[in-house]
Amino acid sequence: MTTNNHAHLHQIHTHIAGPAQHAFEAAGGHWTVMRKSVFEAVAAEGAPRTAYEITDHVSSALGRKIGANTIYRILELFIEHNLVSRIESQNTYVACDHPQNPADCIFLVCSGCGKTTHLDDQATSEQVRALATATGFTPDRMVIEANGRCVGCSL
Amino acid sequence: MTTNNHAHLHQIHTHIAGPAQHAFEAAGGHWTVMRKSVFEAVAAEGAPRTAYEITDHVSSALGRKIGANTIYRILELFIEHNLVSRIESQNTYVACDHPQNPADCIFLVCSGCGKTTHLDDQATSEQVRALATATGFTPDRMVIEANGRCVGCSL
DNA sequence: AAACAAGCGTAATGTTATAACATGTATATG
DNA sequence: CATATACATGTTATAACATTACGCTTGTTT
Image (cartoon, rainbow over all chains, first blue to last red):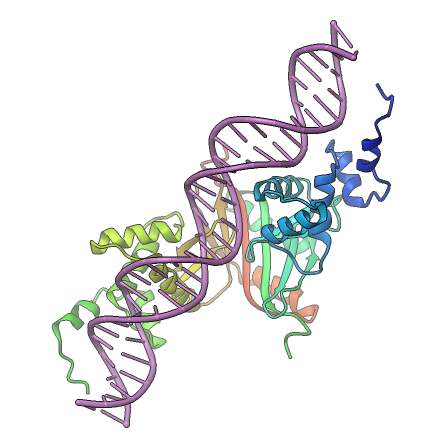
């Protein structure tokens, strides 16, 4: 092995490795063209995007029609690896800054402009977890979202 | 006015007024047969129910086919009046115990049996609100959910 | 009675997500 | 390098969730 070869491999293993790619590969994942493209689509805008928006974005980036389920598969994979979070109250997806630190994110979703910011507050998310645990519940994934108005839209 | 009359009104203004009905009417809403039926469908089970399950339940309760949009309309109305909460991570709806006290609920959703319990912890939800507010965000509705395993399903 | 609003019906459609199965592509192994 | 294997994606169809547009009936106001 390790005769690292074929030209088309170079196009996959581009050198723009962001933290996302790095974390994903460190976990044994393959950073394929498709996955790279999906990640870029999710990360492209400040606002979270729907799966079908991502589908369109990827389709035009690759110049061919991609099926929705391909996108959903990859989003699910990314969510498992903390590269992406799903905003439950919006049915949208956002890229996650810190794949290293799998903290529970707190999302602030603006109902005016759609922009979403995210906070990490270990103390708060731990408090929610502790509350749940105290009842005998075993929490897995936390969903903490605030819907309201961002600074710009509250005027 | 106030010649309170017609027989069919009596069937609307039944005397089983739970706290939900009471709060709803206090807010100026009309507790119609349809709305009563929807509320009962939502409240019927421990587990939260999807809008289409509610649709089926109401349809068989009333003996005729009810359209999904009728259910969605009423669910939305109930949510505004704190009679019902939507579990965002499940696309389901649950009846709310305390329409009086519009606290932010914390839901514990079991991925095993689907049962959902709800906590009220003012301190925690206030903490999340405070976090949001500190960034200049004006929170409206909070979504705090924990997905995991309930006591029975964690074995 | 006329005007209006609230509540619901009906039908169609839009949006989000998954299932089932086929095909392609990378990697390991003899 | 041939082949086996597992992983990744394509294709098609459909399920699940939600909304729109419009009209009819009923209750309330004038």
